[in-house]
Length: 131
Length: 61
Image (cartoon, rainbow over all chains, first blue to last red; front, side):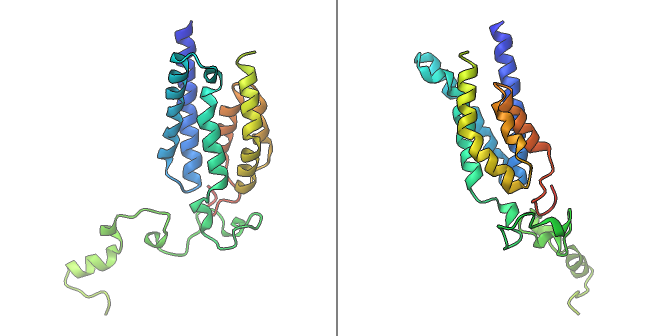
C-alpha cells in the first residue's frame, strides 16, 4: 500500500511538472525550469532520513518558491507591446496575428541557415535578389 | 489531518502569487481559489492555468 501511495505521488508530480512546463512556455520562459520541482523529492528524502518535521511540508516547498518567483518576474512573451500594464492589452492583436517575418520575432527560434530562404536560393542560382 | 494541515498552509502561502498570475494572464480569479481544496487542489490549479487560454497573451495562447 505505501508503494501505491508513492507511485500516485510520482504520477501527480509528473503531471504537475508537465503543467508547469506549459505555464512557463506560455510566459515565454524555458520549460526546463519546471524540473526544479523534482528537487521536492530530494527535500522529502533528506527530511525523512533526518526525521525532521520539515517532512510534512517538504513536497510544498519547491512549488511555493517557484510560484512566488514566477508571479513577480517579467514574462518575455508579454513584452511584445510596450504598454504592458493595461488590461487585455493584447486582445486587439488577435491570435497568431503577425505582420513581420517569423525570423524577426525575437520569441521564435529560427535556424539562422533558413533565415532568408528566398535570398539564399537566388544566390545559389547565380541571381542577385537585391537587384 | 497531517496531510490536510500542510496543504492548507501551502494554500495560504501561494494564494496571493496565484491571484497575481491569474490577473497578469487575464484569467478569472477562481482557479487561484482551487488551491484551497486539500491535496488535489494545487495540481488542479496548475492544470487549469496550463490548459486555459490566457486572454492577455499577445498571441492568444
